[in-house]
Image 1: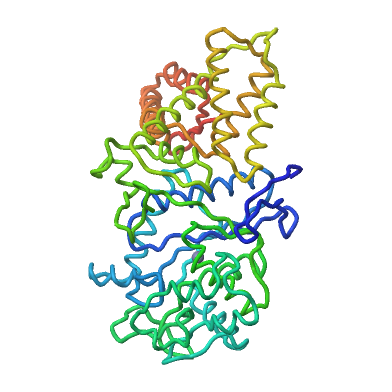
Image 2: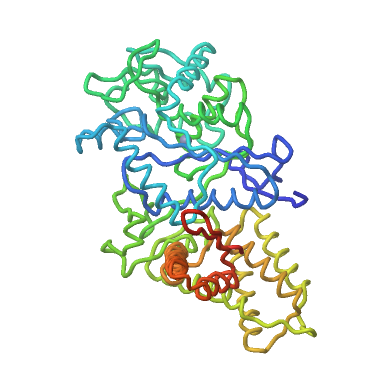
Length: 495
Ligand code: ZN
């Protein structure tokens, strides 16, 4: 933790030196998916961006509590206070219980994240599991005079809040801009001002997702969940709150207002936002109907795709751009990422086959230099494209070593392997996809060992001790430790 990490804070609009509120610990909250459909490329970006942040903070030695929620209630169709709940609508159309829809897409989301090698967060709370906490938040805001009841629904009084505090500190919008931007919608009649937003909505008779509250049977407003769950798991003040740039307004702006209106000050020290993925210059998203799901990418089953793209190609493609730049989808760009990723992984594999020289020209100093360059790039607001360009320089050196155009000492080689593995696998979170992926290969290896052990059991039954011992000894030589038990034999691989 001796390094100086700078990160861009959307709140202050500049890069700031990262100083956690509690020495050695980081609390990070990231807005997770609304689970009513398959994850698409637009979901992969925040997941991979904050996975990179999570991995790097851990690499620096911080103990990180990473909370990423599942939105399973309250996200209405128009991202405003009107329209049907996105999950309830899906449930109605497919004649399912809303929680069946949420569970189904949560499972699929997590499977896609596994494929992308996105580490699971420390806590994955569901909005529906925190209705009481959200009601408590609404009560505090009401007690402080920044919310009012109307027809059983509770609205945040943005105009009153703006008089005492300032609304728009995150997005830079002032109230007049917001007034102009908000459209006339059915039901705004309940609100005092069009800019007010719902904290609690009374459920219409046909609305199936509903909970009791002091005000009405209903459901919480979308913005409440992150304020309530962030505070529950990370405390009244925590370090990082992240999400896609499209959440800055209104979602995160409203979260700040809710925090100040309830506890008197802001909860979050650093706000981080990843930029969008565009497709022909337009944001990719469900609401734009131009999205390609992750499974479609993996299988190549979308009319815009010329071929399938593996999870690691997608991950590499996203990491090749700085998280605050836009990324435009195209087949050419993805094919270039695929080639780049393969080149990098080939070099990592080749590193294992290099023979060191006693008088090698490269030493541990080279590995240290690579490590320092990569760390310097990451300390500058998680600049993964620069890290990747340094790693490409290393691949050229590895190729020279393999061709005998350069030499390296044994200690230098060990240090270089360690640095390359740390950056490629641990921090960038890449993994080899050769031969159908590691998992499939390991499964096959395991089955082969089981087969050998069954042959050994047969040999033992026939009192063929020579064959039985030979199988055990040869497996031991390969690193497999065989233990005889009364039911047969077990094995493990000692690495
Ligand atoms: Zn959120």
